Image (cartoon, rainbow over all chains, first blue to last red; front, side, top):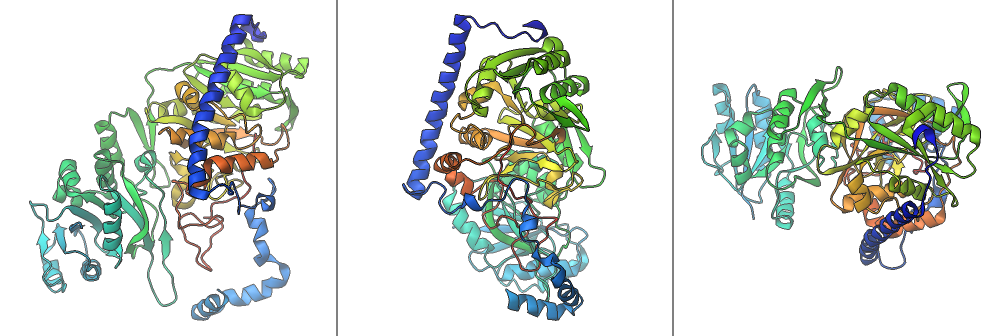
Length: 99
Length: 518
């Protein structure tokens, strides 16, 4: 196998590899079955990922900060400026009212 | 129902702090409380007498254990009215518990200010070695307190020292996801004690050099490795060529070249799992980069990342496996030593490094599962320390990205390898959860760093069947990541609750995109 040569696979080696892969798959299925039975018991049969709405997930290049970044809209700047320079007590009241 | 003693160290305390703490105990009516005060100065005895605790006795140090549980707290902090009720309920449900800790409120409570909530993750032993993330209030059974050094001695200790000693004994510590105390300390970052960690390492036979961070109260436990076991580096590739650092390169060759030239750990072989259409020029480049260390395994089936990794592992024999994407580059020369050292812990099965984009921002600092899996702090600057210094500590996580992860071979086999039902995405999330299911721990370390030029190899896209499968298998785990907190929401800082006006994007767990890498 020196100098990056491809591994010359004989029948015995191929069978050994196949056996390892089969064993891995069997073990994975065992653990998966236990986990799936537990999820089924907790959530019932019709759940899977219901409610997670993956179709609304962000694109890989997008960030949450972009999604909620409405506070930096240009038209909001003067309002934001005024809000940030209000007395603290007034800001607190506004914040609570908004919430 | 349990009886509790509250133990306070009054060393260097001022009257105001002691009054605040004693006053908070008046509100706890559930069970009789006794208060033990260690290092009480003469001038503060008056405060104790006037505390109004009535029939509850206040003792200044004691030999006898005045209850079946001890609540250790800082002088100046206050129990919430519900703390004892929470503890009673929790202890009733977990009779064989060890140390218990919980969440806290920090900052001055005034008319116009809301205190910050510090929400803590579940038990994370590796993290406790770095800093006292459990906070300054811990509860322990009296028997455990005796074993750990006694009431007076533990009360007088640094909180980090106390937590480490209590955690070493008895059952694994547990977290109550409720506010157990309020603190007037605005400073809410965890503290640390190098001496405490050094003594802990001695007691637990961890051979390590300890390094205190230059800027933060964080200890790095750098384990010394006595042997350098052989590592099989598994690199799946199809011979992609892309521009890296301004030059067009064969990705796998670049990954191998940097690994060999930079790593101070040399005992490894490299197994290239190559798709059949891999161009011969790319194969030659890989051979030139890796020399004798490289060998090829041909993969002739349709693309399946999990299948390729499993095949690579089946063709290897080393006791440690490094899964490495071809679009990576080693940054820290001692990355492999750091990760191998962490695997010396028999309970740890997998370690993941900090992965960094080419522009120097974070690609992954471990996974977080709630409510869908994603990479922690993706796209944040590498200099960012994270909420509660999360990005500066080695810690337990629910999973790490398979783009770079060091795994014990026996754990990989025992967990059934990567699940081939996830050909593109979530195979690493699934694998991390399988390891947890088997009782192993998965660690993230910021002290080992690799570049990950993600998405240069192919366009990742979530497949509906992968989403359905991960939910069918692990929805309960996705709903409650132990290294998160059930009181927190996504997009909101992990340790600050969603309070209007107090959202901090810098502190927030960022991003954002579900994990769709490799």
